[in-house]
Length: 150
Image 1 (spheres, one colour):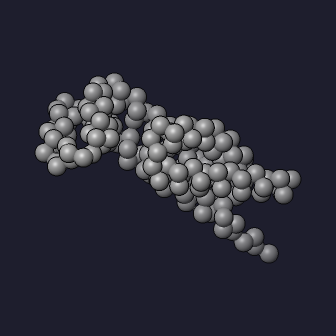
Image 2 (cartoon, rainbow, N blue to C red):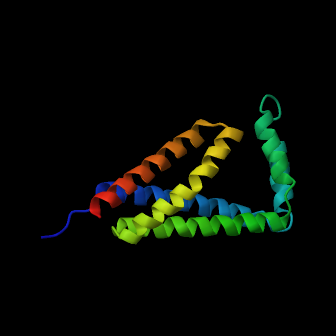
């Protein structure tokens, strides 16, 4: 008799794959800013946008971004690729219903929650709160699943 796929694990795996894809897109963007003139061209384009009035947080973030050099963008791209690889491994393992992937996801998710809480306290957004809630729910679900199957 064939085992039916575990829907919740498949959903978590898809979530991990989406996060990995988003990180890879961000990494490609970071690597793209390393080339000669790319950052300056982006800066010129952003300066033409009508965001300078009433969007102090966005303007401050953009100013910080343009203050970074090519080495920082390289480091950011590498770190984003590493996180994307971890999320892809988690997602693949969860999709295949591997027990090691459940443990890996618990460890990685639990280790990132303090950073998410710190980020919320420094830059509160609804998206960050939603991501924290989803990650805590995933963590609690996987812990309960691991305990039940033990």
